[in-house]
Length: 252
Length: 118
Image (cartoon, rainbow over all chains, first blue to last red; front, top):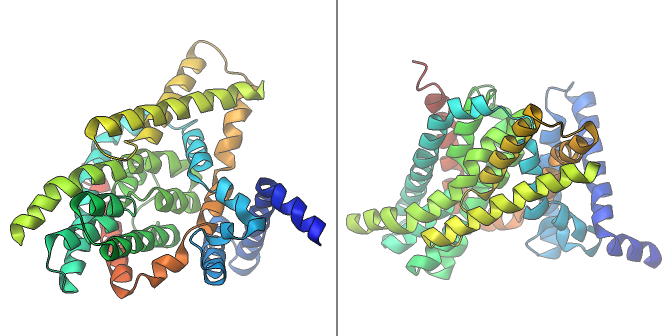
């Protein structure tokens, strides 16, 4: 048993391939036999991944989901930003230039609109919960942009660490909800073509949420959504601690 | 050679991320400005160039398509390493803020997508 453990830990990336392979297999089995293929296998796989991350988090009290188990530390590499970014870029192979160009304006608009929309609603929630100093309101609003914009904004404008932690939590909730809800509402919001995928990427912005959400709807749409989402965090980091913070300060 | 495809993908990714970091430091922000988007754009330029003049070759192509096919398992691994407990423990306000923002954003997807057509 100890020897097996050692093999699994020292070859952690390979163990991760097996682990993910099992999850995906189980998910497609479940999808075909219990939902008649109506609920997409990859959507189930992503939800199973999140559930196992939750259980692992309760068990290990760590922050990296199942990757906090030594045996599954390879999942952290496989699901880390390096390989994720590499694979996202690869999805652009075969994407259509003309689709990209014809939806460019809608994409750019949704990007600016999306950051301001998320920020406003996040800030409104903060205000309705009784926050009345502009630093806290701005930081919580920033967190709902993405969980990267939250802490960057918070430390730039000098918010309390408790508020920064809240902003990260709000951003995490957003990203997890986008992963799970997207396949359920895709039909209703017309998310079935490159243009709406670009708008979706620009409105949601969370890289992991958009990546997983679109993967579960139609992998062909991934490059279009990822193309706009990749600019979202940067636009948030530019707008929130500057223009939007001044606006909130002026109001209070 | 399959490595040519992987290397081409690597060149595009690294160049994109490099330009993204440069743009970030230009704006004075600690984030990558569109690195992935730039990388995707480069890859699309390269492949349309190859299709026009040279052939990238079926085997080399597999070096790229492999990574685009392994994308979903990578996303599953990404889901399995999220801090889900942290998101749920963030309290009611974090949950409400996240939920509200996602709901409103979803509503605007069809509205903005259909803007021009009307």
